[in-house]
Picture (cartoon, rainbow, N blue to C red):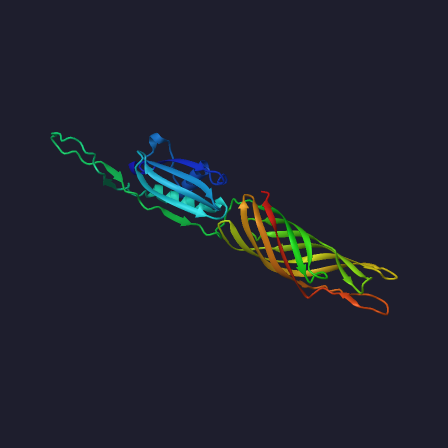
Length: 325
């Protein structure tokens, strides 16, 4: 009974700005006591250990700092858990670390003598021992890998707007405005939905006749993250695009108008650099393999091929992105 009483602790949990999603005091207690299968946390009057857990968020990293001391304040060790993912990636490791500390607490930190303040000599019956100060114990920092599951991480939604340019999709290099909606599931790669509107392009037969091209496209891609560091990340996007192409002739005796569907497979790399929560800069560079390549020619005696999409087109875009929730 005395041995168990010596292992009872009082707990306090603090969550700083940006760490509000981390475990609160109630859930830390529940996780630790479920792991140890016994009562651990009590009021100050019944405890012999004091445990403090502080969550902080800085520069893309969430840290859980665990400080253990005797009830009188004598330090008995610290631990620090760090993750670049959602705070719930710390849940299991935090419960295990706290359980180990309270179940087999380290010995109190050793004390070392401090320089005694000079005082006039006095006659005493026994020498007064010098004052002592605690010798700090090295802090253990444990980094939780990004791939560790974060069970409480919610789905996130990103909204983005970008300027885009493509070569091979339309006659000459054409700019476009792109708007995207990204869905980031908890246990799957992010999914990107994007709409694009291209600036009209022209292909000429001669100085007075030719065709104008208008292109709208919708894209769907899966974009797994390859790596991240602090506020920057890199990813790979693989997907497909469906386009609605309108071609209208001009300068002919009879100007026709046609509408065609285009289809392409896409692949490329993306990068993000966080400016400030929740806004980031996003860039993308990739290629498109056209599976539908309609050929457009003028009619009549002076027939001429006006345009055919390239088998492989090159694209790039840069813009801003915001995490809505």
